[in-house]
Length: 185
Image (cartoon, rainbow, N blue to C red; front, top):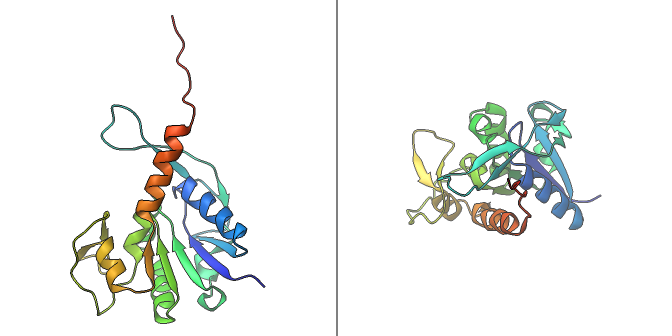
């Protein structure tokens, strides 16, 4: 039986992150399991870069089916958890089920991965050291304290942030994607 990796997302999760992670894990011979608040087809989004914008734009993306619900996840069945980015973490980071899951993975000393806005669900350990931030700002499980994702990575030895790698991947993808042609008058 292949090693199972839990992927946590929900509506407005980042489409590229979800599908790319799922397919790469399958290629590696692992068994990705997508968990969401409810078991159904999820409405994912694409964050894209447009000329003239100071930030990204959000568009409807490809969908993905949730394999299980957050209520039905058993941490013992998975070797690692991947918390995806997009807009889903805006509500999932406050969901007690997600926080309990991530804490349980940490207690069992299993790997915890976060991409982009999924980083804020990473657990903080007592060994946290102060380091300069080199990634995006992230909230910890304790929403009263603000630390960088780099500090989270430094303090939780089994936590890995994939935000920079995914950002480079998406920028490269958008640079090579053909743009729709504009009609000429």
